[in-house]
Length: 465
Ligand code: SF4
Image 1 (cartoon, rainbow, N blue to C red):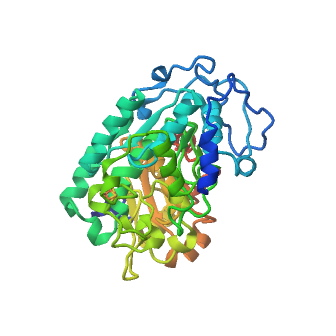
Image 2: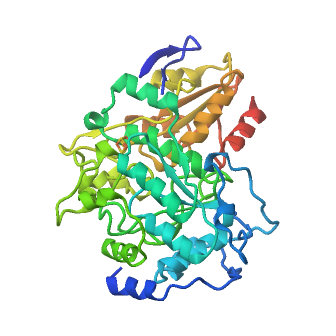
Image 3: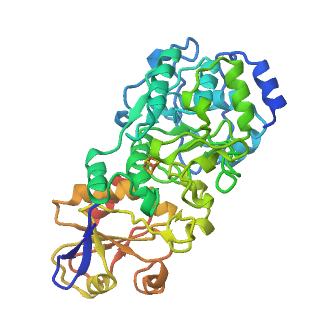
C-alpha cells in the first residue's frame, strides 16, 4: 500500500509498506562411500569471489548428527583458513557435466563443509539427502515452511528427520510481513494478482535469510522440470541472484547435482534405495509446493502444469531460482508474473516503510536542492532486474539501520519512460545504481562498487554523511 509522502517540502514521493534410466541405474548400482580423506582440487582457478577455504568437518570420521546447526539464519561466521581459494565455476561445471549426482554431491560437501546446506522442499528432492548420506560426509538440510504446505508435507518432513536422524533447519516467513499481506489482500491474493508477491514474503525472503548464513547451497533443480526456465541449469554455478555469507553477488555458489537427471531416473533411484516419499505423490502430485498453488497432474501432463496453473508457463518460478528467468520473460511490463490472458503484474520491490518511493518530480527537486535538510541515499532500480532483487534484503536492512540516523533512504523506479532521464541526469548506467545526495551539494555521488551488502553500503554512507 502506498501512502502519500512529503519530507522536504519540495520532495514528492510515497512511503511504501511493505539423464537416461540406464545411466542413473549404472550410477547407483556402483554406489559406495567415497574414499577418505577426499583430496580437494587445489588447482581450480579464476574465481569471481573469494570462496570458502573451509576444512570438511570430520572428514575422516563423519558424525552426521554433529554437523547439524540449529538455524541457518543464525550461523556465525565459520572458521575460514588464511588461503583464499579461487575457482572458475563455469569451468568446473563443464568438468562435472558428465559426473554422477553422487560425485557432484561429494565434491560440494567436501569443498564447503559446514558452509553448505541442502534445500529440501518436501518432494522428490529427498534424493539429495540420500545422495548426501551416501557420501558419508556430514551435511545440513534446510526447508522453507511457508505456513501453506499440505499436511502430508509436514508429516513427510518428520518422516525424513527420523529416517536420516537429522534435524531440518526450518525457515519461516516474517510474521509482520505475512500479517500485512493477508490483512490487506486476503488469504488467496495470488489467484488475483499473481504468485510473486506471496512467494516473495513466504519463500524468497526467508530463503534469502538462510542463504546469508551460507557460502553454498544444494538444490534439486533438473533441466527436465521446466522447459521454459530450467533447460540450461548447470551442475554448479555462482548464484546469479542471491548473496552468501560474504555479501554481494558472487558470494554464493549453487550446486545442482541432479540437473542432468530425468525425473523417472530420480524415482528409480528413490525406489532402489528404499527412500521414504511424500504421500502426495501417490495422489497424482509430481511437483509439490504450497497447498493452494499445487494440484495433481494427469498422466502425460508436464509436472509444472500442477503449479500456479492459472499463470503462463513461461514464468513458473517462485523466486527461489529466479536467476533462471530470462530477460525476455522478465521484461515487458512486469517482473515475471505473466497471466494466462497475457496481462502482466508489476510487483514492486524495496517495499518498506523506511524507504521513500520518489516520483519523478520528487527526485528532480532533490537534484535541484543545494541545501537539503538531510542527506539522501537513493537506489535507481527496476523491479524486474535480478540484481535489484538480489540487493533488496541488504537495502531494506540498511534503511532500517538508518531510520533514526537522519539519512533519508529512497528508491526511484528508473526503467521505462524514466530511463532516458535517469541516464542523462542521474548517472544511470545499469541497474541498480545507488546515489548519495550530500546535505550541501547538488551533485549526487554514485556508489562505485558492486558490493551491495549492508556493511559496504553503510561504510559508503558514513564516509559521506
Ligand atoms: Fe504463496 Fe502459493 Fe507462493 Fe506458497 S506457492 S508462497 S501460497 S503464492
